[in-house]
Amino acid sequence: MDLRLNSISHRYDDLEVLRDISLDIPAGRIVCIVGPSGCGKSTLLRFIGGLEKPTRGEVLQIGEAPADSLNPLTYVFQDFALLPWRTVEGNISLVLNDHGVRGREAEEIIADVLARTKLSEFRTAWPRQLSGGMKQRVAIARALAVNPAALLMDEPLSALDSQTRELLMDDLVGLWTRAPFTAVYVTHNLSEAVRLGHRIVVLSRRPGEIREIVEIDSPLAGRDLAEPELDARQKHLWALMRAEAEAADKELAHG
Amino acid sequence: MADGSLTSPGGIATGDRPEARPVRFRGGGFNPTSPRWVGAAVFVVLIAFLEWGTRAGVISNLTMPRPSDVFATLVDLARSGMLWTHLVPSLTRLAVGSALGTLAGIFVGVMIGLFSVARAGLVPLVAALFPIPKIALLPLFVIWFGIDEASKYALIAFGTFTPTVVATYGAVDTVDRTLIRMGQSFGLKWHTIVLRIVLPGAMPGILSGLRVSLAIAIILLVAAEMLGAEYGIGAYILQAGSLYDLERLFAGVAILSLLGVLVSAAIGRIEARLLRWRG
Ligand SMILES: Nc1ncnc2c1ncn2[C@@H]1O[C@H](COP(=O)(O)OP(=O)(O)OP(=O)(O)O)[C@@H](O)[C@H]1O
Ligand SMILES: [Mg+2]
Image (cartoon, rainbow over all chains, first blue to last red; front, side, top):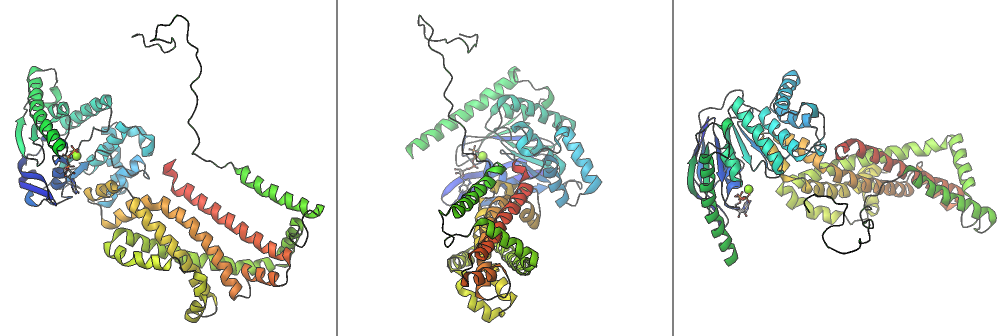
């Protein structure tokens, strides 16, 4: 299942947020969206998952989602969005039960996703007992449990410290390498984009337009930021972002 | 400098060692816990003081009955079986009335919390009903529901309804919206979102509202029984009061206080059970 954004524009009252965004999200690839703060990245992601409607344009799903996918478009949120009154297992079983998966079948899926995110020992823990990185792994496990056709991630690592971020990035690369998934990954962090993205979309300052799309073909598993090629890519992205961010800053200063 | 040791007072190069003293502690507090015995001790001290005062003659027998006499009255009441004759109807009224009122209140509160139409239509209505002293409406309820039990149920239900509504919709408003978005993004059904996300998220607020409404329910129970009941704690207190029988009056009051303590403890247990996740 591919996703296609067809000239999406959006405004909140008299605030123009996005302008004419067209983008293809091919199956099995990770598309990263980067751009200065407030340019509409989170808004765009809400459109892709159908949580909000754009003023103009549309998001198309091309082809059917796999039949065993319970929730084709699944989010991973920046602030985890775990229910504090349910255990790790309870948070996952909630979304399974509601899609009619119960009993043994649900047990097996929970055990499998917890093993994949290295959380098997914490099955019965409450969210308050977990560190930030573990909470986000629970959220990722919950997302994997519904077998999504595309994962929509909005700065999933930005609430975490940099060591945890590195480890979770490795986890994501590992998960993708074992079973490639489609993902739209919004981030501020260019090294995350270069590590995880097959395609990196740079948005301009608000109103967000596509400035450039950078393709990186090297396999995810082998990527090392010290490689001159990746380093050059990151520098190039930073130059683009920097100009936008500076311009956005000046606009704010002038009101 | 880079050795990272914190024990040597580094930085300023003074000849003699500066004085070392522990950093002043200024955390703590703002986290009351309740050791069990403190509450009991307050009661014991108060009752012991009254007992001593009435025996020593510092407190006249006309102003305060002796606690031991009140206790003896209670024992008599229990022996004669009259305690149950009064207690059973009272507890039934309390249970039925407050169950009706709080359940309806939680339902309406959740509706107000979820639907714009309910909010626009019902919030002003609830604001208009809240300040009415419900006991003033008892004659009306007697006309509507008859002089028997139904009018008492209605009074208690109505009295607990409004505070429960206000507490519930306030609590629903505080539920984290990102959790609701999460539910929607996983394609959860509407009723699952309400039952598994909105209600548990609102539960702390609903339970603290319940404390208030159950106290109101006890007050209304007594008032209703004073206005027209053969049996019940309120009727018992009224009879005692009209005869200026202070021992029996205080025996009745003691039963009410005990009821208040038990209800509060019961809600404490429910909170501990339902809000276990808060740790
Ligand atoms: N529901 C809303 N109503 C009105 N304005 C909104 C709403 N949501 C977002 N905005 C505005 O739209 C703009 C884009 O917001 P959005 O959250 O998509 O930006 P972002 O690129 O994700 O920013 P960040 O990098 O800080 O997360 C912002 O100026 C924000 O104030
Ligand atoms: Mg954002």
